[in-house]
Image 1 (cartoon, rainbow over the protein chains, first blue to last red):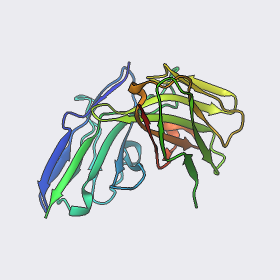
Image 2 (image 1 turned 30 degrees about the vertical axis):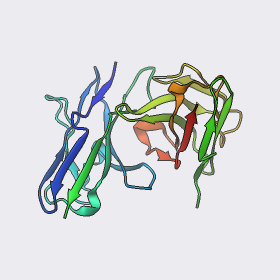
Image 3 (image 1 turned 180 degrees about the horizontal axis):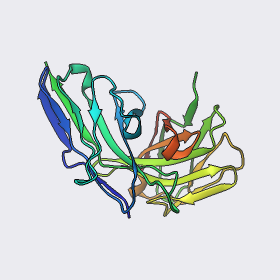
Length: 112
Length: 114
């Protein structure tokens, strides 16, 4: 079965500091991995997906298959990055194809 | 552009009552999803649908019923509401499922069961 683990419920950093939100997964195959973000009073939205290897709003995430991790990083946090972040996994095949499984989320607060 | 809308946004009901949460999308997306969001649990998939008349259970389907007679609508019914179903419910849609497509979420429906 697939599982997504975000070990930190809360994470606080000061503006300008580096930030890393941890995500570990368990899945027997090769999943697709995503980070979704929910800003205050806004809808949950896609931040980035590993297959695109893109940087969005200064965030990057590298898939480490050996460690089964997909940590989200940003070298210099900004106050507007304060939000709830969810790591998500989509099975690449099988009966659960097409679904998206989320971790419990990490609430990031960036202090001025 | 509304895209995907949920109604009602807020609902208070009593234990044992039937409640239906509506979800409507205007993109003709094939895939639609229902999640519940709870502190400590994050988002958990209740049901999803790959197309009209095709639905499947997610992680926490017990106590819920869905239907998909039209592509644009995906209502979620709590047949006999319980206090444990107090939650925020999110509907989402996607053109190609989670693997190939981005999920677009509604604003959420906050349900309180007394």
